[in-house]
Length: 121
Image (tube, rainbow, N blue to C red; front, side, top):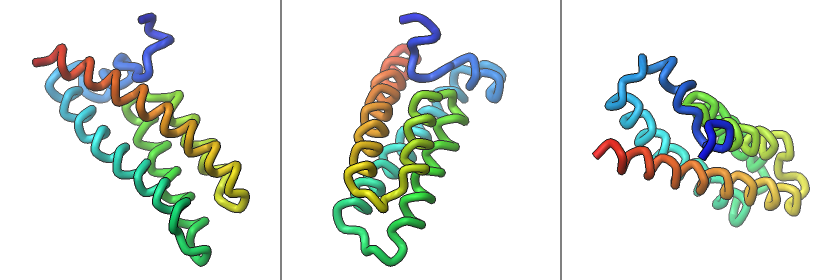
């Protein structure tokens, strides 16, 4: 897999961790949990969120995922989260489509992280 095709730019992460493989692994594990939690929150908001503060909660969750993904170098996932953040929830079909892109990106990142973590062990 070429560097450009990888879901996480490890060189980007290395700039923050000094290239320490153990720190990278810990950061990736933390991201895994945070990402899964945020994607589940987005799904929940679309399925049973109350209209009152649904837009704010959606925006906050998508924004948090965007920042976390950029932090580890998962730029395609960050872009999908940014699109979801911009799309909002006013149009449910658009929001569902944005969520599907986020979920696809998140799955790609999860698989990559598992590969990295398996290599570390």
